[in-house]
Length: 247
Image (cartoon, rainbow, N blue to C red; front, side, top):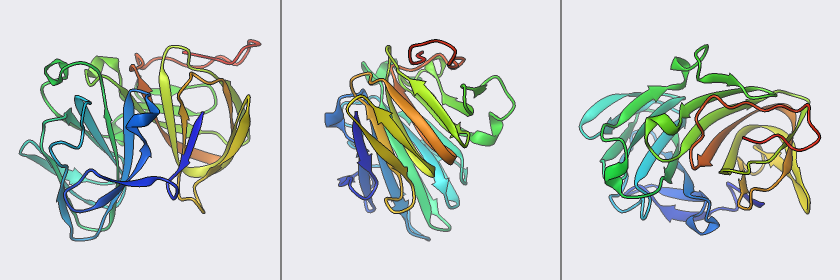
């Protein structure tokens, strides 16, 4: 298990001008990387062409603020819950009307040509009440990107119910969970760490060895969950057994 808070993460270049925090690093070797970037009100910025590095796909999720997003010449309004996904080589830019906080994921395997050709722009509200709004066991999981979308990794907005304790282990995927609200703690064989979304601003738990762990939620939580390789999107947990529940 690797734990990295927003405040402890190092700086990294993702956009041309704004400085990003590298929350899940390439050196963590989990098949994806995660960055957290704040764009000032009025700022216009573009993802640099080499930011994705060896990864063939990119996705950007708006946590807060409003503005416009443009991907390969297509522009739409962006607000909290907006998702943009594209090949690594696609040009993605943002124009912030108010201060915007953007989470960027680079991931996937193989050549860029194997990634879905057309970029997509979605909003999390489109998923609520659909087959991609899954009760995962102790909360809802909005499956924003899954295997069938063709980007080589899965991205979910995962809600954790208050006062729950979930024993988990992903034996077939590497998972990173980036908590942006709520409180609680993760507990695993050799340690524990609080879910700190106040003093540390956000906390990532990176299961780099398919770690068995307990997700203990005190106050209702929201995290971004990234899976490499991607999940199908219909999976849910069963806590009735003696072993940690796994996909």
